Length: 378
Image (cartoon, rainbow, N blue to C red; front, side, top):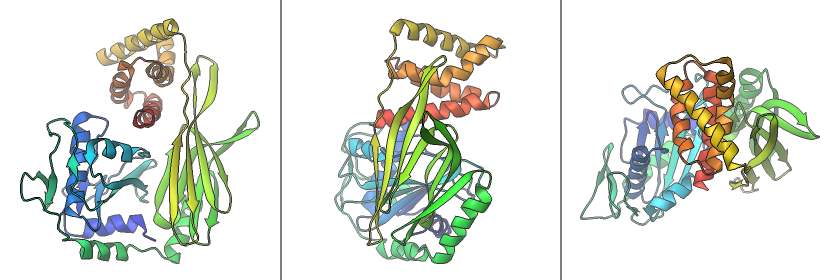
């Protein structure tokens, strides 16, 4: 079993970017240019490593390898993105790796790419890259190839050595459990569960009961053996259930207009553990967005846009407008889910416009955009 935090450290210590490893300060797959560049690197790494894993480490400064972290990214449908744009797509996973020195909510992103052994190509045009393009790694650069295409095994031995050095042990597991419960989450209700005598899942959060149902908020869930953060949110509520074979979370979002709020199930995540030391993670988006009268939403949408215009111009908001701004992440999310497509772009702008002076609204916008990303991937 590989400790992913050790794996990241070993990758960073392995000279610099090369044909099986890339590093990024951040990625922006919600924008066309960022999505295209990400797909290019995935394609190039898959073609340059037909017989071994390749990796992208996200949240690292390029010049000095300083680990600065990125926001927790819930990527459960990122494979759908790769499948949509690449022929012979590799298997891909995005994992959130906690590091002790990073501030709360910040992690290092680890993208693991496993080629299917065939040449990976871009299926259709995106940004400035044309459908049919093939990319390979030359040193630390992903470049197009127009001729002489051949998959070569150059890195299997080096990657196998790095992964071997990142193997987990009982000391690392125990240290991880103690640190999770006693240090990082000493102010929250914390628990752990051992599955199949091998896997340790830790979770922490605040408990509340609504209409007989127990929810957790400010939730952090980690698979300690691999140092992978499975779930993190300061806002959304989740339910947690488990038996001897599996650990399941159901994430809920609280939506509504005015005081008429209710919980809507968003996504189920289930980890199933096997006796042979393996596990599978399955996700299922179950979200059914609430529908509202379009006339009511038009009024709310126009009011929100007026507030965003005042923010852009630096105008002072009235107390009533500040209250509407507090609800804007939820109401603009509802507008988008009811057919107001431009609401998403406005929420992206609002996230930047509220970060400095309205931090609670900024965090709520991050959570709302995360919901939209899940819905769009699905």
